[in-house]
Amino acid sequence: MGMCFPCPGEASPPSPDLEEKRAKLAEAAERRQKEAASRGILDVRSVEEKRKKKEKIEKQIAASGPPSEGGLR
Image (cartoon, rainbow, N blue to C red; front, side, top):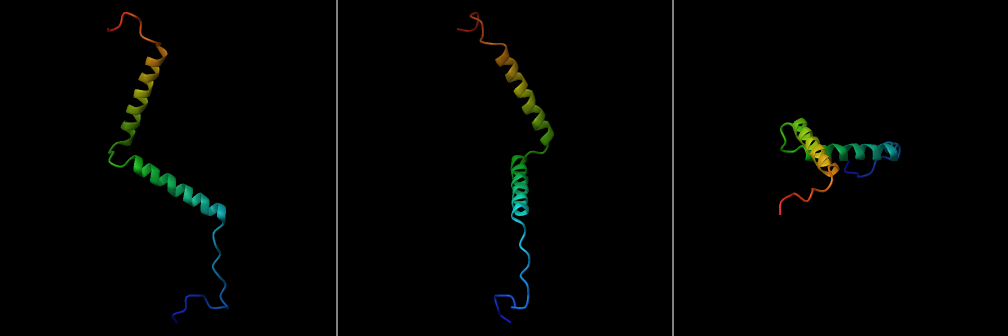
């Protein structure tokens, strides 16, 4: 009654394996990052599609090379 330590006859509960604990922490961190990335976004798929489309356009612009001399002044 009122003791902070287990009785001497009781065995302490087994502590989780270090690798197991690290894996759980890594999973939790990934889950938090996904939740933070999608916070405030109703349709995550459409945002991903827009981002990919934007990257594709940027690659096309980069692949076309520098603009010719007939451009704007």
